[in-house]
Image 1 (tube, rainbow, N blue to C red):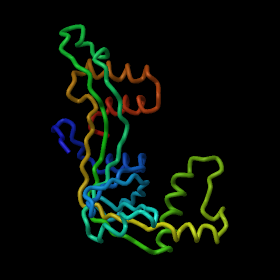
Image 2 (image 1 turned 135 degrees about the horizontal axis):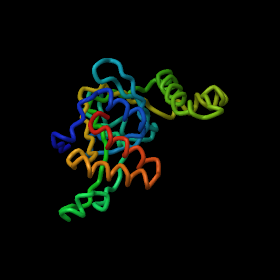
Image 3 (image 1 turned 90 degrees about the vertical axis):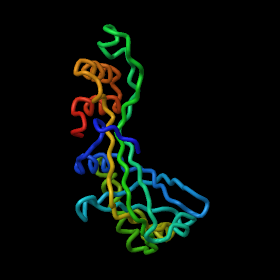
Length: 212
């Protein structure tokens, strides 16, 4: 990933926060037919230090788990907030006119080695943890134990686990750091006027810069 110095995110804590907040990721591997991308939720554990571990699962019918041997390199892409930035938000537009549109975004690339886990007990523990985290915000959270045991055991048997020990994390926060303070303030005001959740998240990132 191309990262100009002023867009580089060096904080592991900030990258972990983005990954945890946006768990639906793109898992990219190299298989028999070339590059393959699978879109799956990934559960982040911050251990072992410094980068942590990712765990996920795919359907047993997905050829990924048979084609990717243990130890194969993988790339997992996590996409945070993104937003179109109009030049009309820049005060410098009125001063010089030398402005163009751009796109702001925050992303994390997690590199590591894949381990396929065909173990129903591991899958059960993984799905239980993933479900617990995703259901936590609901007034009446659903738990795996709410479904009949015979049914869930059959479902667990239909998937295969994936675990990736993260060996490298790369973060890019393109959040108007290359603009003047006045233009940044204009971007924040414009995004807040839009008012949708993603625009508001991006406004916060612009205010904080690469601090995450």
